[in-house]
Image 1 (tube, helix red, strand yellow):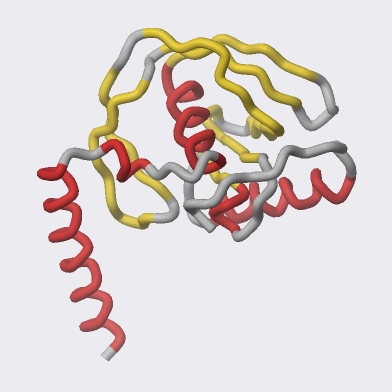
Image 2 (cartoon, rainbow, N blue to C red; image 1 turned 90 degrees about the horizontal axis):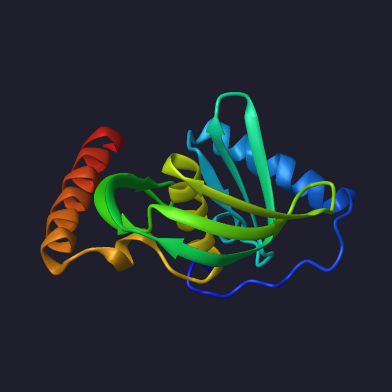
Length: 157
């Protein structure tokens, strides 16, 4: 599912908004600051974000219009718990999406909101943060995964 594409939303309705509210609950419990529909087994073209305390963004049918600059930042992903790596992404974005009120929004942003948007957008395209990593970073990550798995096996026995 994480490598599959997503289906555009035709109608912003109560069922969709309930689903996105459930995604927000899942994101909070994980805990995380973003969650895309493919991460919870859905092919809907939506994601949720919480980059400011008490503010939740429901992003529907997002598009990236422009980007500028590049910067590296240490990212994690709820699909790869406990793994973090430096990922280079644009530092400024201009995007378009539909909000929970069914309104089209065009927004320019940088910082954490932009980074989270790009990360979650990638999930809708079947791309994962590990796809940005060098072979060296991937080798180190495999070692970390093996250590996490070994600890988990020890605790469960």
